[in-house]
Length: 398
Image 1 (cartoon, rainbow, N blue to C red):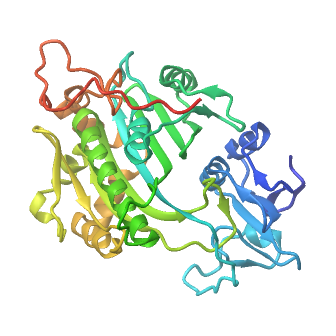
Image 2: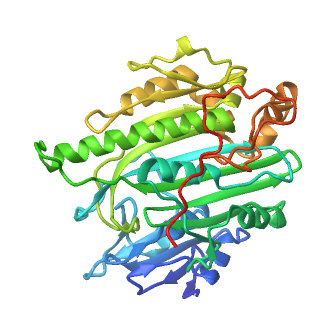
């Protein structure tokens, strides 16, 4: 597994066309005792699975690719490296401009939506992980996850109860698993403590494009309409999740990616943020009023009456959302926001959660429902009678 160790790096070479998160590689990346940076070295024709990229980035590692002439560059940023050791050293002057090398553009890409979502769960025996992932996949593509595992290939069929037990047995260690479905790839990270469970979902989902109807305006316009429709469905799913569980933040980004959802050492079109969810704990802790959000589009108030959350529209298939995102974050306050998303979230919010009993007010058990939410506790009125709590997310293909 390890091909060389220097004063700067632990070097791992791979000649595979598709680099997967093997069990030995996952174990290497999970070790954080060494000050040496793990550098994965491949040719520029290799591609990484979502699992490898997530584990490598989380471990502070680097992906160095070489072309046929032997020149090295960063596979994700395109920045040149003089040698492999240079990939393990921090840039001497982070503010100094570094010009990426000329990296070929990716071809044959497809529209995708990437979502990063964190949900807090109470420490209940019937809490179940994975409900948000099912809801997001169903909303965008009509399908959900099919398999999961701590390394690749993924050996477990999708089962939320088994996944949850896996996270509980690993406590207090943080668990990250890779998930795959017919139209999605991502990771689920869970941290189980005596305060509850932090569940973070990072997933990329294919945007389906239907066959052009009569009178179609053309493939580009059809693709834009399909993306806008998927954004609308995903935004609605976030609203449902906020009404039945306790999300803290979510960011939705539209992007162009490879059809297998792997990452290549190519240049991709810039991503576009299209929606931001500010969950109930964040709204409360930040003292955030709806009037403080400078959105040019209507901000949707979601969640339960005593647990309001905000869904902020940012962009769409034709409009960049970067200005709207920056304006929103500026209004919230970057410094205050940083304290809200710093890990571990449950410890950061412990006093507020206890004061308002937010975890118990939300139906976050995850026993049933499209968002994996549990039913109201006995004697508790359901504030969301207009929701179909018995609707099941479509299972992933076998």
